[in-house]
Image 1 (cartoon, rainbow, N blue to C red):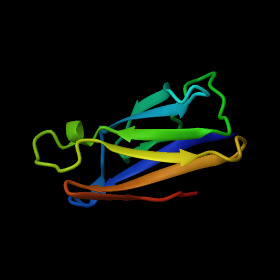
Image 2 (image 1 turned 90 degrees about the vertical axis):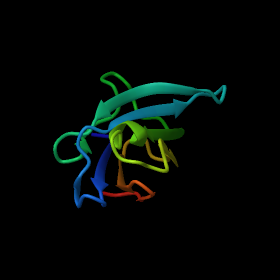
Image 3 (image 1 turned 30 degrees about the vertical axis):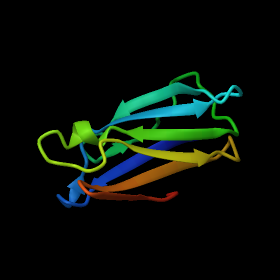
Length: 112
């Protein structure tokens, strides 16, 4: 099954980032961004499927928006939002986008 998933690790705490809100948007032909899914990371820092039920993966640009300011609510953070834009070339593949996060930095990659 094709889809988009994520896994967020809080490197400052050394544990999964539980309760982080993530939205998934797809770029339309008019170059607007359309919400196609959202979720909140579970106790393992994961969201296993971000596409809403009934939404099909398309060969276009997508972006994940991580609401890091809300997650770090009681701690100071430099990035109140992290946006990761990526290109889906094969709509029949799975796309796993992990995020390693701290209050002052982040990194991401295409996982498996």
